[in-house]
Amino acid sequence: MYWVKDLKFDANGLVAAVVQDWRTSEVLMLAFMSAESIEKTLETGRMHYWSRSRKKLWLKGETSGHIQSVKSVAVDCDADALLFRVEQVGGACHEGYRSCFFRQVEGDGLKVVGEKVFEPEAVYSTRKG
Amino acid sequence: MYWVKDLKFDANGLVAAVVQDWRTSEVLMLAFMSAESIEKTLETGRMHYWSRSRKKLWLKGETSGHIQSVKSVAVDCDADALLFRVEQVGGACHEGYRSCFFRQVEGDGLKVVGEKVFEPEAVYSTRKG
Image 1 (spheres, chains in turn blue, cyan):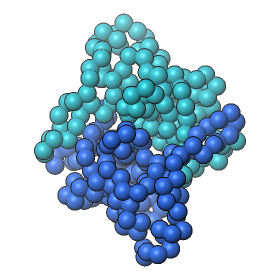
Image 2 (tube, rainbow over the protein chains, first blue to last red; image 1 turned 180 degrees about the horizontal axis):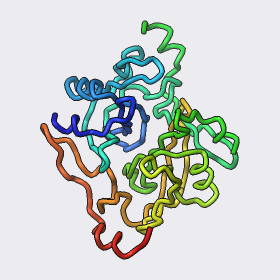
Image 3 (cartoon, helix red, strand yellow; image 1 turned 30 degrees about the vertical axis):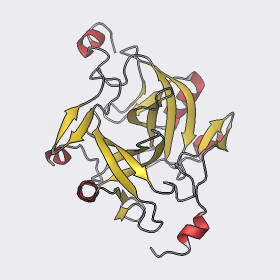
């Protein structure tokens, strides 16, 4: 995949990835990817990210089972951001929502507007990792 | 706007912003925002970004006229990414496409799949800035 080598990785070796539901076009999450996580994603067809907090490669759904299967991949004009359309199992957000962007600005505050699709306690307490 | 203060800005004082067409849900671009650019955006209703290359606040459309009017704003679970739904005048991409994500991965390469909506030469040669 020559185009992966041509991406403009930042000082930490990462590019931003926007993840969108392939059917509804809802934006599910934003995360960061290393060259290795991009290669793993392309190889397996399942989204892998670089966790900036845990400083490790991360298969989305490893713990929760909420995997994301890749349907298409696009590269932006500056070659420093990627857009993935995916089929999402369960919810993208570890707080139980379909999208991580479940809070919307209303007036001076934030209001929960996203759809809750699972209970985090039920999902994360019964699995390892 | 108390929630702006609660955002988790990175080491450079930035958060990532995903920008989506409010009617079609097409993802138009990804850019970075400082606290100041978020406040300017909320005040004026027009997208302002932080240019990492030029290291300055930037009103989208300043040169091209291709402004983005904010329709809604969402914050992600980690409070380090924003999602804006906007009405886009012209195209978001400086290369003349409606979306910056106009190249899609096909096989081992990239293919232009995005809609070209203006000629960059015509737009950027007749205006200052």
